[in-house]
Length: 70
Image (cartoon, rainbow, N blue to C red; front, side):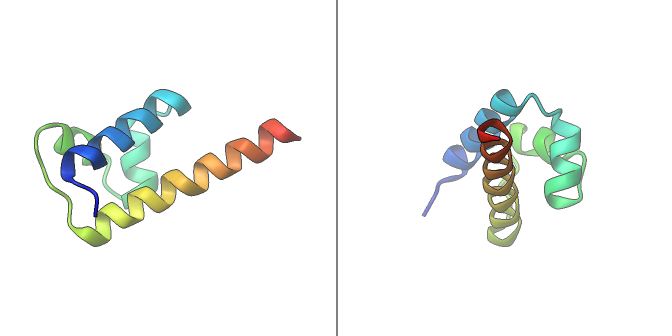
């Protein structure tokens, strides 16, 4: 099981890797443009919300890898 701090780190690493804006990530991943700002401020997302965000990250990374390989 991932801790809240590990989750935040995963999100921040993804944002740095992808160059995606925090508001776009929140909107696209979980439907909340303030999501990243709230987790930076200490919000602990529920399990389902965290899973949605992590699934978005995984899918986006896979898509980026496919684009780079082509």
